Image 1 (cartoon, rainbow, N blue to C red):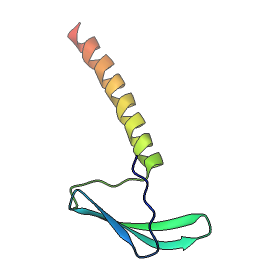
Image 2 (image 1 turned 45 degrees about the vertical axis):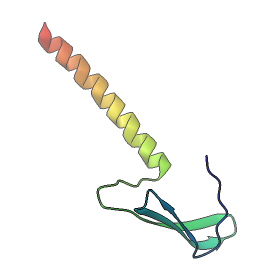
Image 3 (image 1 turned 60 degrees about the vertical axis):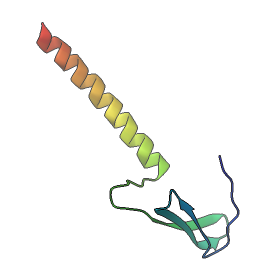
Length: 71
């Protein structure tokens, strides 16, 4: 993990086309802005993990149904 210090209105660039900017700092909360191409999905981590779990559950259910159809 790369750890960087940034102040309000400072940014970092990832892979030449993603920019993360510190917009606001209030107490223990930091508001960030992310500029990325539309084809790159950006999720909060908790939402990303929910999507991954839903995909795993879907694949498991589809896999079982496909096996039943074979017999």
